[in-house]
Image 1 (cartoon, helix red, strand yellow):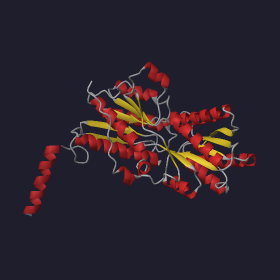
Image 2 (tube, one colour):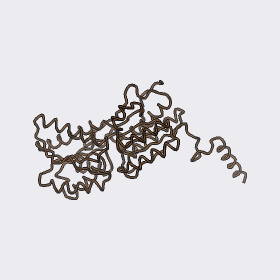
Image 3 (cartoon, rainbow, N blue to C red):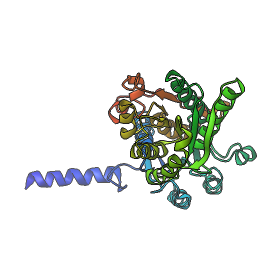
Image 4 (cartoon, one colour):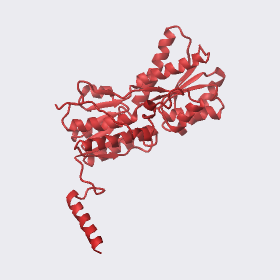
Length: 358
């Protein structure tokens, strides 16, 4: 009884010291909402882990941060993402880290959040350039992959691999994602830029298709990929670039279903366990991988440093997180694995830029 009473006294004392905030933790100095495009892709799970680690590291510097993580159930549901932005803003968050589903549709809710005093960092995919030109201070930082360069790297990897296999006049397919997604549109443009440059240099490269969209899920991607492969099969497809995780996975399934996986070279963007295994199996030649862990980390870090009065711009709005071709030769390299493996990410130490006080 005495032991129980003593334990109860300790609990009561602790509660009196820390207050009644959520799960029994002291109220954070900053509540930061992190809203990805969706929740299902492994890319977003890495973003989440990076955001959480940034909060922990900021806590180690004496800046307590609470991460409020939520996103649309489907990456095609812009209305749900808009509603989440408004809900989080109404909850009194001081900062928002957002991966916009649509570059134009997300501008008004971001403007409304900023009007209420919320600092906004954008990750993964940009806001409308015209809106940012009109209001350069709408966001504090844009943390993302150089997606145009990622698309160029994908085109180079695909064309080079086909040349190594003896296919010097390749017939290619661009498998797009969805209209309005700035990040994937940049990848598509980068791919087409590189192909056009090679054609101008005298290489005979044929684009069999460049206007099919995979949609937001693996299921929609597979549904679109099947008829595309059937319609183009007789024209002799040599290689395909699928511009994100779900598009690449849906195309991979369709290729295997039609027994074309050993005859058509596939290059994808982003990683997942099925895609990584497909690289090992030889059904995917190359994946252009991002660094979503670092992206989530720096999205949170920059918005909190801004709130703390630091100059996170330092004359530059964009912070590039890098893009890296992954294939059989480097799939197990530590510098690659830490970009997508949970256990490797847990061992990472991030060294953010030294942002000076304003």
